[in-house]
Amino acid sequence: MDNLTHTLTGVLLVRAGLGRLTPRSTWIAVTAANLPDIDSVVGLWSIDYLNYHRHLTHSFLAVPIVAFAALVIVESVTRLVRP
Image 1 (cartoon, rainbow, N blue to C red):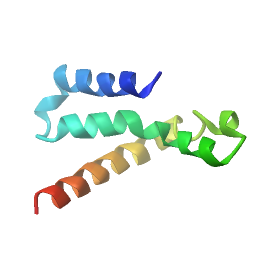
Image 2: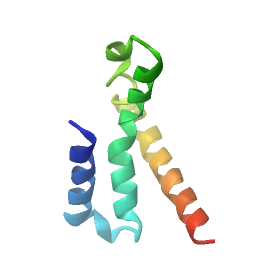
Image 3: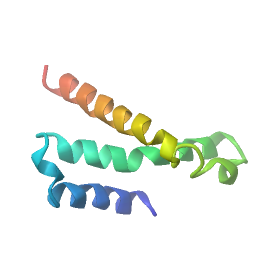
Image 4: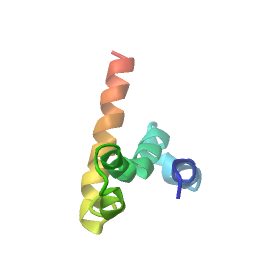
C-alpha cells in the first residue's frame, strides 16, 4: 500500500469509533499507520532496499514500539505547537 492508503486507513479507524478515546486520536492513528514505512528511508542509502522493506518494522514484535513512538511523536509536536 502507498502512504495515502495508510493515511486513509488511520482516518477511517478513527471515524469508526477510535476517535472517542482521545482528542488527538486522528493524528495518533495517522502517524501510527504511516510509521512502519519508515524503513523506506533505508532505500535512500542502500541498494538492499528490497531486503529490508516490510521486514522488522512490519512485524508483530514492532507493533508496541511503533504505537508508542506514534504517541510520543504526536505528543511532542502538540507540545511544540501549543506551549
